[in-house]
Length: 152
Image 1 (tube, rainbow, N blue to C red):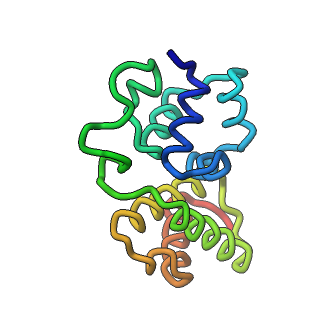
Image 2 (image 1 turned 30 degrees about the vertical axis):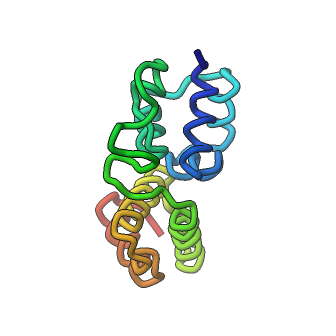
Image 3 (image 1 turned 120 degrees about the horizontal axis):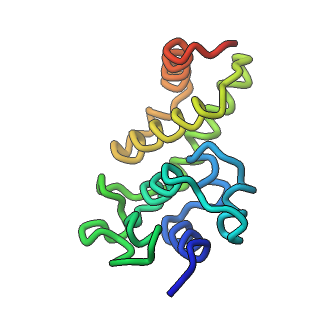
């Protein structure tokens, strides 16, 4: 039987993400992920659910070490059936960072996390590199900022 920190490490490694990549997807610090792994803190229920979704493991396995680690249908894929790709994640994160810097945008961490998560899911599921293009990123960031009331 493994503890929660060990299960997080296993899930992250199997998904191909890094601890930093997981932190970026969740919109939290790498230190928070490390604290979970070391058992200093426990993730919130939402973060636990998000970890399971981001790494393609079953929430029941991650939270309580019960049942199989992956959904029977997943075999290394999440419930939507796409490969979790660190290349896509890095493209999305780097693109958002670049556009934010170039346009002088002050993206709140929560909004940044939503953008990263949604663009990553769309890019990975569609296997569409255009979703991380500068033009698309600017349009999506602009829309998100208007709808969230974020400032420049």
